[in-house]
Length: 599
Image (cartoon, rainbow, N blue to C red):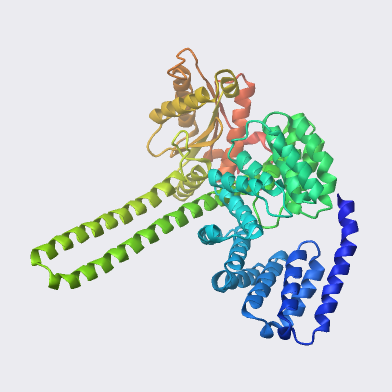
């Protein structure tokens, strides 16, 4: 396949030379608009396959911009914006593309510029602006008959919606791409968008053979990036199914080819998945190797999923090797990357909800203005009608305005409800990981200022995976909810209670001594063990193991408390489970983070 491209490039260069020669032979492009159109079309066609020649054509056309017709000018401006974006000059790229999207007379050109803008704004984490542009793209979509432009727009819309958790619409757009690809395209790109949306939505139960056929099509047509992206998603799915060896085999067979594509973002995905797979296989040397590669290859200043998983693997490797200091350092970096990544995920979802609510609010405002205009029209007609009839109209219209006001109030309350949902765990209703971290840090900061101690309790349910495997995930969810209900009844209103993930929970007890924390933990342990796990299965009991850390020995920084409590929890697991262990900073070598706490 790559050999085919190498043989095709000389022909492309020859064709480009012929176009450039023809362009130079014309003294005044304004006298020959068809030649200018041909050069614009040529530049558009080769912008990916021969970027250097594309740049020369754009520069030549820019020198004659003043002589170009209106549509030719906007086509050139679009190509300039695309070129800026490709080389990483996002600010100039955004300005050029916004000019085209907002001012071009051709709807297809506006549509293409808007689609490219969506990609650029998403890369720049300007999610709210990206979703505003997505709304404009969706408004234009019914009128777009150009299949290539529509194909591009569907792809950008599918990716952005999937990143914000809107998986059903993302899948619908991906399937449309697969069902009706334009000339020169296949089902390759649509299949990649569909696979990623299904995997991120946790709707992928088995691997459809269609995806493997799509990879073969991608390889055959030179769409290497999309083929390798599908391999990355399949490997991640295999890893989640416990097939770590299959994931390693799939990724190692294509990794060398991926390196030649110079696509670092996808390479870090490969390396992070390989690091996790080797860790599951017990190959700590390769786990460390690919974990370091995932961290080193991540974009500077960005907190991505491969970066946080790379740090987590490195933490696990060092912990298993007994290198406590290195494990502590990597755990701190993992916590920082994990929080930033979750913040970015929440920002995408919240941006979608905000823009969606703004659209509804704008529609309500338009309805309100229409009603006001109707009031003015009817007021003028009152002179020609009976006073009683006029009053009746006014009452009806005022009632309509009241209904619209109620709708605006409802929309505002909906926005507040969305913000509340973003802070709560969807299954148990307690704080999610991000909100727990924020609340705990505020409580600890207040404790540090007022010299009031606090304690952190980490606990997770023993043998919870066996419950899921034996009775199914529905019973597992009921076990989690009943355990949380038991703990809620035993906790105080000022305690911070959150779910960190899976079956792991954390409780921050303000103004609490280690002895009191141990008694509280024992109370929680006994309450969980004494309560039947589910109503449907009263004989099924579940126990929990607990680890405790206090500010008396660890200081008031949350990450230090988490590390010490996690070590105590690990000792509780090794001691037979269903017990409580106090954290001991003496198990961790001297470090600049613990010097003050020990002194």
